[in-house]
Amino acid sequence: MGSLAASAVARADDDPPPRTNVPNAQLQKELAVLHFKPEAASPACIDALKELHKTQDMLKAEEARSHDQDLAIAEDVLESDFENSIEMCAPDVQRLCEAPNPSAELAHTCEKIDSLPDSAN
Image (cartoon, rainbow, N blue to C red):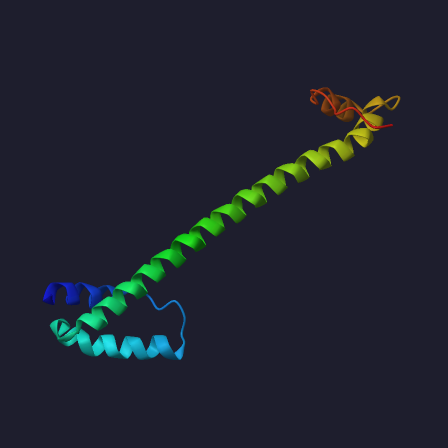
């Protein structure tokens, strides 16, 4: 039980505090004391630390999952914004490219455009 207590106390002590609140500060103080003699931790203390770790792990996983989901959504929105911008700008680009007597630079730039989306006009 001593090694189990030591690992539970050490892990709790190693984990950076997720928030600087009174309960967390109090727990850190208690763990600092238990760090001197981990085998003094009772089964109830060890079980409570295990539950704390389980909850911390779930929260970390949820934050990572949520963050990844938000990132994927943001990438989808960005892609949609690109597509929308291309579609909305296509008529303007087409007008410039089809204007009579374009400058050589404009004509060259227009030649680089593979195709423009069909305009709704």
